[in-house]
Length: 121
Image 1 (tube, rainbow, N blue to C red):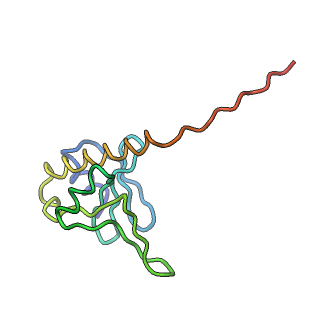
Image 2 (cartoon, rainbow, N blue to C red):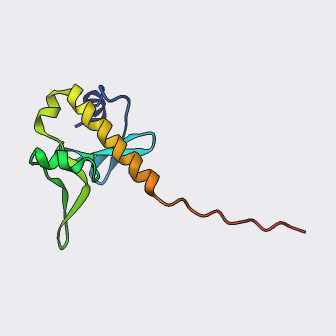
Image 3 (tube, rainbow, N blue to C red):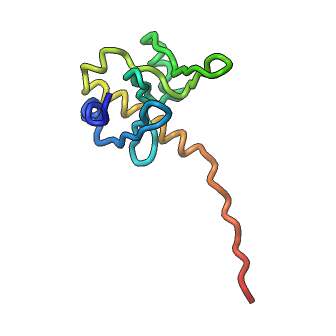
């Protein structure tokens, strides 16, 4: 899936940045990643405790990838329902929820402590 197609899919959400990463792409809004698009063109949206139940209710799974020792599951990104590829309005609603999850995650991160600079005398 190319960057223009991804932007078109997310048009009802609003403008997104698309960046290549790890064989797929990341979908970003104001520096926050809200989605992963795999090399197989599968979209996974950012999720948290507030949004995971909606994915589970749809029978969806979190993002999983192969490693040298098996598979790793990334529970913070969940596959979108297949119908959303044809319904950009509904995808926009799900993407807004993903953006909210990304903002909650960013807000919960501890801020780096600022060190006091020594003044020269």
